Image (cartoon, rainbow, N blue to C red; front, side, top):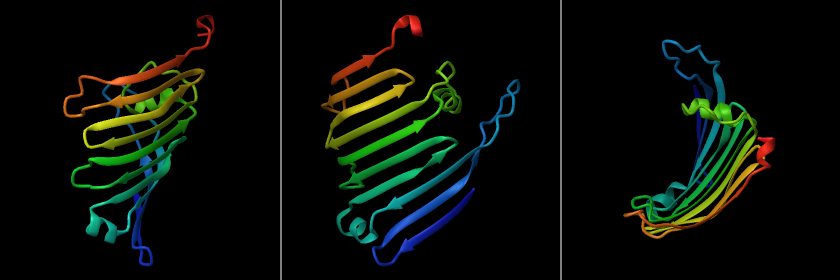
Length: 168
């Protein structure tokens, strides 16, 4: 793992560049997996904005193996996380490889994308037309979780597009 940390004095932002490789730990009966290269750039808000207002803007951009990662978040108060707007975009050539990293077998060896946008205002979480695509399967979700303190109710709309079942 290597890290390069820079702080731009003009805008007082912090940038961290990380690179290296990850290897899944093999169990007694598992084969040793090949190291997966990763590179990640983390950008943080101007420090003055964080100190004066408790607000932060964060970005994460990078790659894990062949997967592309792009996450951005605008946090109005880092101490409470009550007002957050975030977007996430992930894509890669194989959902199965990502599943292996997470210890989940059975995912298809198909390209995937995730595009999600959420906002949190106090205890309400809004999901804005977030989409998961694996191969030809597409799941589109939007809606609201009105109370995160007791998440027993959600007002969600989901659409699942499947190819013809015979083709599966």
